[in-house]
Image (cartoon, rainbow, N blue to C red; front, side):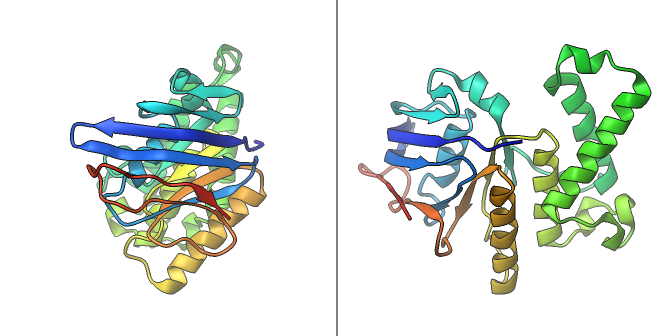
Length: 241
């Protein structure tokens, strides 16, 4: 799946406590790696959800591929996927890795694929689901055989980085053109942080446009820096390389 261009012009979202973010302006080419950088509470996740059509901006505009925000929320949701977002994509600690993957593939087949795909023979649909899962796992760098109990490993037994990789794989099953990932450097070591960014770079280089929330962006990526706490009068950010 090829990535898509993403751009924003004076994008802002106002909530009950004030502006979550405001004045967001940037342009990113297809296959870009975009970092949303700032302290927790500065509207980073809200911006992530707004750019993927999960929240509706209050002012300004954005374009995601051929869709325009805030009007075409549904079109943007179909082009994008989100991962590792607390309260949105939470993993069930009681389910196994295999159960999560099979459930996501089933949901994708029922609600994300075309009517023609649904009418294909059962064996063909099953093979397609396995291919989607294997491709997503490879892209996310998650080796089921390396887990303590393979696919039967419960989410509660995953290391933090393994859980992030699983969340990415689940999002990639839908073959999104825009992938948005929250809190990529939360409670990880420096080595793990470098590993995560290397993974996100590989996804972008393979063609998917990636937006990632972080506390500190690495060098060489388009960075949207947020600063002040949510609810302050002026919370603005612009893209920088």
